[in-house]
Length: 92
Image (cartoon, rainbow, N blue to C red; front, side):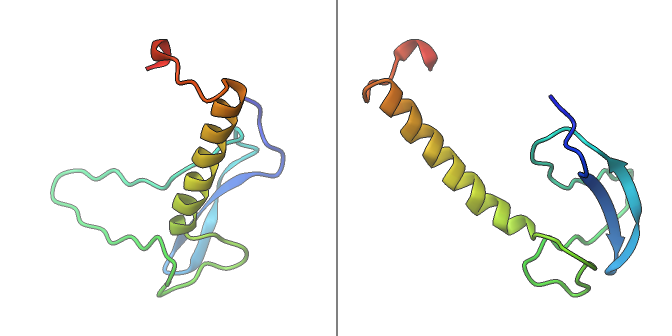
């Protein structure tokens, strides 16, 4: 994997920018996650309606699901076009 120049992962809390965690990360799609220990609780809002909108340019996670569906459909169409509509059983 190749680093994508200018890419970064940043954190926000209640819409306030907490800083950049990583820069020039590998190209790809990254999804937010949380790790908790014992009896902790958190509340996460992945959009599209934000109580505290992040500053600057951002994309809600719900848009990624739509993009993934389109990308998978295009990949399937390309596969079937290249393989003349045949599904190879040895790929399952």
